[in-house]
Image (cartoon, rainbow, N blue to C red; front, side):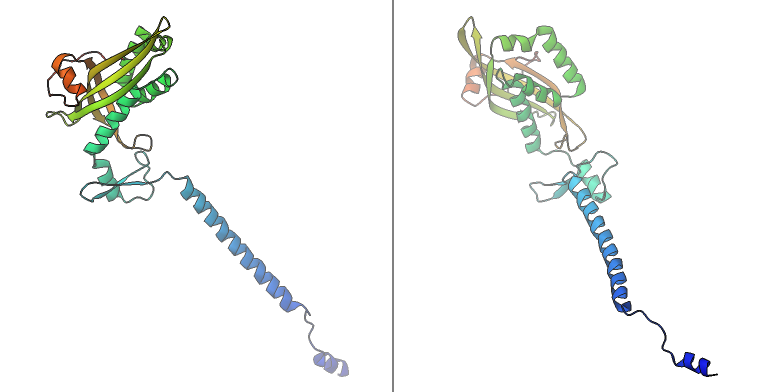
Amino acid sequence: MKNQAEKVREPKFYEMDGALRAYANRSLVIAGVMGLITFAAVVGFLFVRLQPPTVIKVDSSGQAQVVSPYGAGKHRGLLPAVLAGARSAGPDEYEKQAFIKQFLNHYLTYDPHTLGQNWADAMNMMTGNLRHTALNQLQRDNTVGKLEDDQALSTLRISSLEASKDDPLTYQAFGVRTVHKMVNDHETIAKLVEQYHIRLTGAERSADNPDGLMIGEYWSKQIEGEKRDAVLEGTPGSEDVSQQGGNQ
């Protein structure tokens, strides 16, 4: 009986550092949770940083339109209604004229060092069939080789650019091109007054083609007489001309 009473009076065994261990276990759990949250935040940050920017275009009337940077079927979170409006909205007049001027400057402005790159950029702005036709003509005439041999340098000043009354995607431009060449160690300078016919065609907007435009048809023609004088003065008329092959 005495042994049983002594066992009852003995205090129960407990860990002296139990509280410290409890705090340590709780700290480990909190650290693990915070580590997972940090990892998720870093992954989200990298995902956002890798996305191309979303372009919002505001037209002259103050209407905002979203230009999706993704291809078809990859809009990732943008509202379908907003995307539908962005896809249906065509380029405005300023965008079309800027696209044409960029093409003409690439195609008709060059020197011996920039000729290849400028023409490559111009070709990339054309539709596939027009690019194929232009490349065949350049190869057949050895245009690049001749211009490089002559150390040709061309500068362009666009005098006017107007849309056709019959087709809003067809434009007539007038410009003055100055071409320098070296022939038998002698420099020749020619001032060419030209008319350019450009027809645009629509394409799906993308990060590579934010304008949604391509060159579907292009030809140029030198002009003479009173029309030439009018272009040099910066006031070309509206005379119609027949289609001609492109000049370089």
